[in-house]
Length: 138
Image (cartoon, rainbow, N blue to C red; front, side):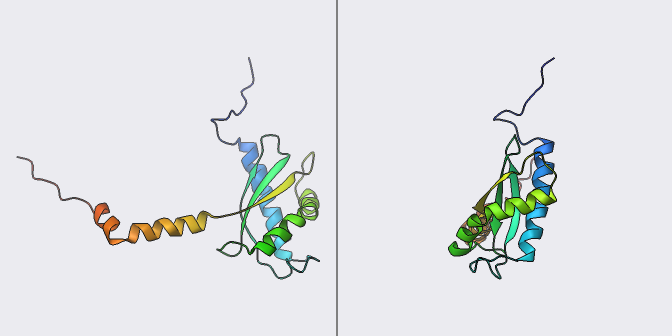
């Protein structure tokens, strides 16, 4: 009997999801302390909205935003510079064989959702979304 591995068409495994969530919590705790030497990160309010793990758990992509909006470019670059420090802090908090490399991406999901909401509220679109009256069948 062969062991099934997650292929390209399948979603992340339960282990990937569990470890990614643990890393998200650990990363959020470190960022909440905000004890950074980098002046660009001093006082920065960074929200980690999601973490995705690679199948081998060696790479984690953290989606970040600044309290509901995109992080300013200077803070985002500073966060990338702080990745080795953050990796060490996460390694202390999450027990894994090897500390994962951390990669950061701006989380644009909220902006996209707000764009969709604005589009749905336009009169032409709202009219098309209203339920059509049913014809009485004889």
